[in-house]
Structure formats: structure tokens, C-alpha cells
Image 1 (cartoon, one colour):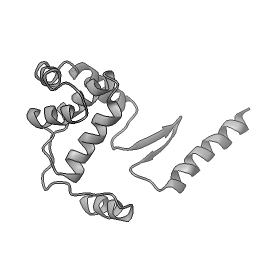
Image 2 (tube, one colour):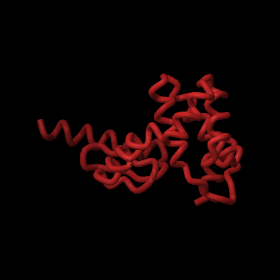
Image 3 (cartoon, helix red, strand yellow):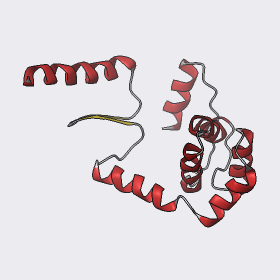
Image 4 (cartoon, helix red, strand yellow):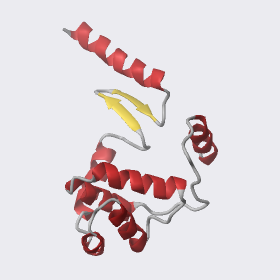
Length: 141
């Protein structure tokens, strides 16, 4: 998997380092939802992605997450409290439950009604999914 990610990143000129270790991203998910609630979702998710995949940072560590939050303009003291109290634990649990209900087992997963694609896909494959869905919708009318 790492070799595929590295090759795909190289193909598109995206920096990729990754890590020899897989870090638990649960707290990062909680921080991401908090960032969403503060209107800084794009920024914090991008920072988390870069920290993990480009810099190889351990996103399971609260100090690392607090530093990432402050790097995108979120208050560090509030980030630390959110993480310490696990204020977004239930929201992340809800996301995981929805993923199980929808049989999502990998990221990304693209779903249009009953049709789905799992994993990173070329643009043409995604386009075919959308066009197929559009054709099905027209034939049902």
C-alpha cells in the first residue's frame, strides 16, 4: 500500500514521506471535527494530512495536534481542552457507526445510491460512476 501511495504521489508531484509506523488517528479525527465546527475544517484536515503523510508526524500525540491546530489559527488552549476532555468522541463514534452501516471499509469510498467505488480511483473511473448513475436516473423516469 505504501508503495502505491508513494507512486501515486510522485506521479502528481505531491510530496509523500509517510512513516514506517501507523499511528492511531482517533484524536486527530476528533480534532478535525472540532476544526470543522470552528469553520477551519479545510485548514485543519490539510494540516493533519500533511503532518501524517508528508512529515511522518505522530498524530496520536496531543502536543503534535495542538501545534497543528495553532498552525492553522485555532486556539491551542481550546484544542488541548477539546482533546483532553474528548468532547468530540461521540461525534466520531457516530461517523464510524454510519460508515459501518454503509459498509465503508476503506477511504476513500464513493457511493451513489447502490453503486460504489472503493479506494483512490482515476478521474475517468469516477466520471463513469457519475455518468452511469445519471443514465440510471434518466431510464427510471
